[in-house]
Length: 293
Image 1: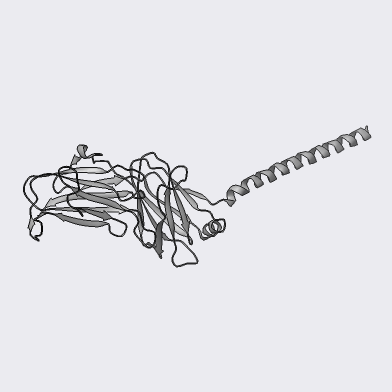
Image 2 (image 1 turned 90 degrees about the vertical axis):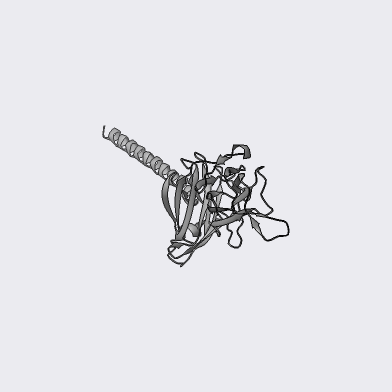
């Protein structure tokens, strides 16, 4: 009996050791399985409404640079409108940071855009970048930074008030300011109709928050064109381009006899304002109004 008890005790100890080894192996496997995900650069997200702030650390920037990777920020707006991103310094070793933001689709493919440059000046954002976005669509911002950076995203809802074709242009009342959005990747233009009730010169005032600055040149922006009653550009240079550098613009229109400097009032009648992206990369929000002068 004593011998049999010894054998049972031995078998029990061996069984316990086997279970311990299995648990240890499972734990080790789970740790190994987590390591690849932790080694990848982190993925962040902006909220679909309101304001969101995220911070990318110096260590994360160094790791991404070492592995030739980017930081990815997911974003899905609840309503059509714009998202404005401001960058401020969050580095513990550098006074200023700089980098690039690129708007991508749900598959992380670039939406016809060159990198939008950002720079920080201490805790203040030196420049902001704005994109027009569509409700429910998933986007990613591809970010690379020289060092720790805080990104603050403000999301605005903007109702579409414009007509999508010349024939469906929406009437824009005299002196009324209308706000619109040019959605990234959208080829269509926004059309507004002006009803000039008497012979006058007119002034178009517009503003925009947009994308398109690569550190040297303004590459993108929003174009505003003044058109005659047929929807054709009024004169050769009857347009203005709003960019990240020039966010406000005023244009005055009148008649002028050939070879003369004298200005005449426009004839009463219907005219049009066309708002569209400057090139494939352009998007953002804008305002426009017109006045008789």
